[in-house]
Length: 354
Image (cartoon, rainbow, N blue to C red; front, side):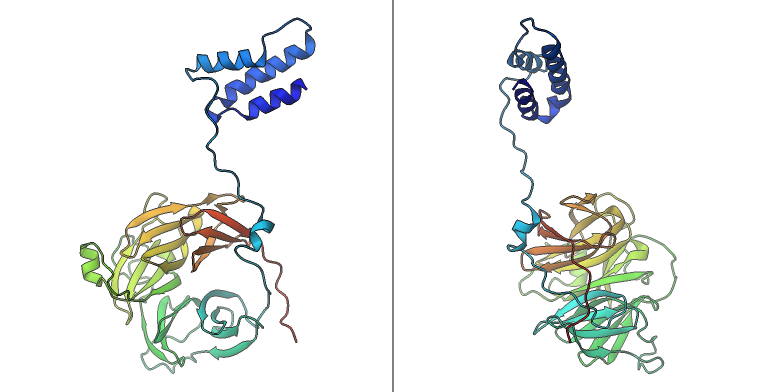
């Protein structure tokens, strides 16, 4: 009974006094076990300990946030795994949603863009660009990574050419932009005219009527209501914003771990004037405004709720933020503010039915 009482009292202590109180409780417990003499009560020791630290007794109730409920309880509330499939893809990377439960899948291994049915996993259409047939003189689609869609275009980040390919909705090449090889090497800074060095993910933000930018010079340059394509340039640890027709507007981010810094970023998502970037080697998600101003970050390295292991993909679905990991294969379900809601580890992919 004394052991249970001691354990309960120690667990109820506030964290600033916890080490000192634990030492006192351990000492008291030992003395009670080996002596039959009357000793001061645990209450007396705790009152004395708090008095020595200048804190009132009894302590205030803990304000610590309780841990999230188990994933099984949240499964029905947030996400539920439906099926897994190979879909005939080889090393699929980023995905862009399409109407009617379809999606664009960047098939890195095959060098194509696959239109996939999300329910059956079957490939409905394949977009490819044979070499030396493009009208604008750029290289063919060889190793697609990021993919995004606007109302009139598809945008594909090509890993080999280190550029963005703009296609029409029929899959024909319109233009390429952002390339230039290793010009500038690994220079940092927000110069959007520097060519992409190692582009990765991309996300398209449509124009929003009545949007405002607060009068910043950067926003006046880009246009407050202009649709923008955000492209992660992992090689320069930054994000570059382009107009819908491929003109560079501005860039933000630099290598580091502080506010506004990135380290090997990968995925990007845009929603409601906020840009989320999967800051992979900082094990976090970095937030920016639509104009590129730092707006916070959340996450740190680890395996528990809210902790990440090399996050690479990020997407917004209604009021949820989804973050996938490069290492571990887990899927984090978060609120748009970064609160941990659910942590999923999908089962291994299975062959499509039939």
